Amino acid sequence: MDGVYDRRAPKRDITLSLDEDILQRAQSLPGDLSERVEKMLADEVAKADRERRLDDVIDAWNRFDEKHGSFADQHVDDIL
Image (tube, rainbow, N blue to C red; front, side):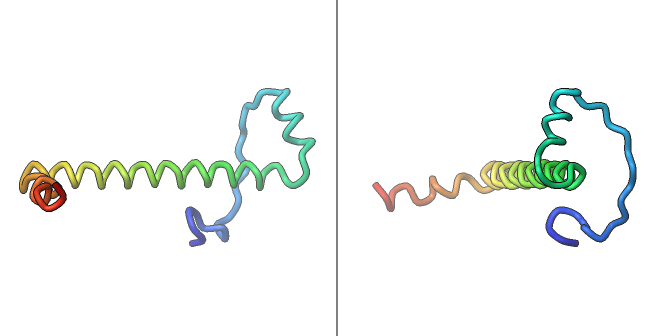
């Protein structure tokens, strides 16, 4: 596994419907279109994973605060 996905995994042909104009513009760029699309998808997956982990951490802190009180409130007198 290399980062977000296993780069050694087999490739699979799929069918996509893309706007003709953007497809023509993308095809005129240097490099392989499939590799660029794969990288963009990997970036989106990584972003979604980070957001999900952040949401999990926020939920955990909120549960902690509900159960034990705010960590910051316990130390507010030390900074004022």
